[in-house]
Image (cartoon, rainbow, N blue to C red; front, top):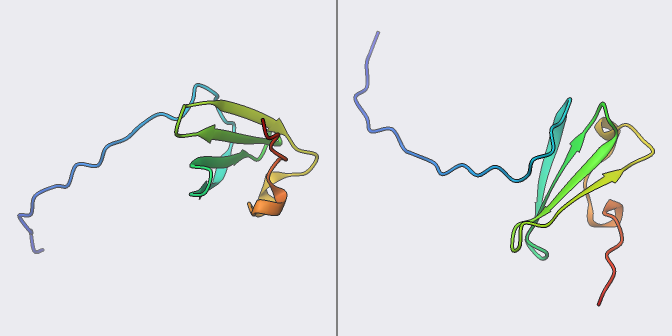
Length: 81
């Protein structure tokens, strides 16, 4: 067995929200809105976190998240101010 003595890279980690998932999957990032998205498949919820201000929203979806793909057209409609 070969042992490689290489430095370990440290990667910063940040918790995006307090919400817990039963089965979280499908993380996606939208650079245009600086928003992270992921599904809680078992609870049929779409999590949304705006990284610029930390705003967190939970969206109940009428389908099992494992069958959906996050694309802009599936994202909840955003109200403009």
